View (cartoon, helix red, strand yellow):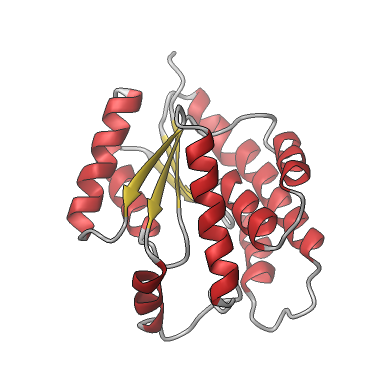
Length: 203
C-alpha cells in the first residue's frame, strides 16, 4: 500500500488557513486535522495554550506543551492515517511552534526544532503551504472577530516576528514549502493552493 501524503497549511493569525485546509481536505478526500487540538488529549492542551486567563505561562513551558500535543497527534492520528494510505491535511504543524515559540517568543529556534524533531519521530510534512498575508490585511480581519484568544491578543511586534519566521523557513526550504498570497480572494487562494499540491505531490 502506498503511504498517504502529509500536507500542512501555515500562516499568521487571520490568514484564512483554517478555511482553506477544510476545502483542500474535502477536495482530496483527506483526513482534516489541526495542531494544537487534533486529538482529545490535544484539545485539553489547546485549552491551556489559548486561554486568555493564562497569563504566566513560561515560554519554554508553552513550547513543551505544543510539542506534547504534537507527539500525541502524530502517534494517534497522523501516522496511522498515512500508513493506511490516506492523505492528511493539517491546519498548522510543527512549523507553527518554530514560528511562534522560536521566532515569536525568542527561544532558540534550533533547540525548539530538536525538541519537536524528537516529538514527531522525525516525520515532517511532505508539503507546507504558507498563506502569507500583509499585516494590514490581517489586522483588518482580526478586528472583525468578536473574541480573540491568547495568541491573537499578542501585539503587532510579536505577529510580525511570527510572519518573518514563516517567511524565513519557506525561503530556506523551497523543496518543501510553497508560498501563496493570502491577500487574494478565497477562491483565488484555493486555486493557487490546489495547483501547488497537484504540482508538488501529484494529487
